[in-house]
Image (cartoon, rainbow, N blue to C red; front, side, top):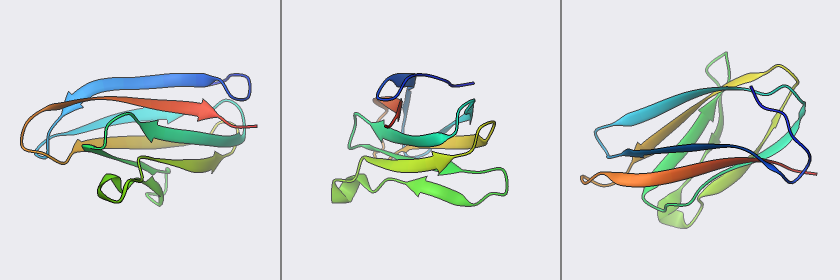
Length: 100
């Protein structure tokens, strides 16, 4: 469950993955607003889906897009999926930051 002041990193998802592996995180937002979800690695792809299974965000690291904005309602839950693009395991740090 996430809540924070504008501009503050509200959570960080840390781990490692490769192209055969996918990491999933369930994130519930306590405050409505726009959040920046971004990875520190160009070797992982990040996507977010809502409860209906609709894709709300997908990064395209091979096109230098490693982050994106998503707007959520208070109490909304998103499922964040992180997967590697390489055969070897790669570490990642995905930040979720509340925007103004």
